[in-house]
Length: 224
Image (cartoon, rainbow, N blue to C red):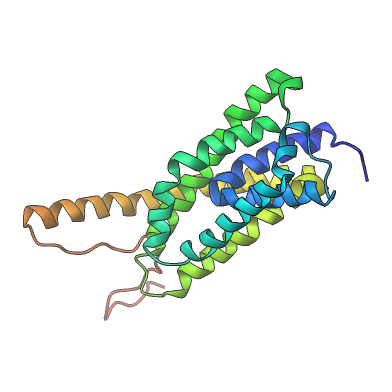
């Protein structure tokens, strides 16, 4: 095993940690800490504190809580709202810690980009899950949550094992995240308008789900 990570690995790891913190902050801390504690990955100096048994125990407890909270419709959105003020600054701090004080300029750049990646991931997660919660299918929420559970360790592993592959996939994920935010924002605006109508006493036509298959009206036949 290499005694230290090279620059492509450090760059990929900073991006992965920043982005993943916007999705599963506690899981990022737990997995990074375990990797350092068991010697799976030579953690940079700024991240070595995550390998402390107390940090591992605390993050493990929060991972347990979040695993179930994130799979309950409604509670998952409330959890996201509360963690808006936690995930983004934590993502910036963890990304900066990949480089530490020995690389001051890189640490500042990593903090700025890591916070931005965390904000993008958090916004995509929060708005998409709010849209999914309008679906009558209860398993869609659980499926999305399990997919997020899998994406975080996969992204962290790729960043260290195959940094160039990760960076290519990371760009695609960012593009998809922006698309999801724009798509889900339409739903949120309709939801806010619905709340305003309810409190003003006007008729409530309901909210159209953000993600649905288009169907032809009854009696309408598709054009040839």
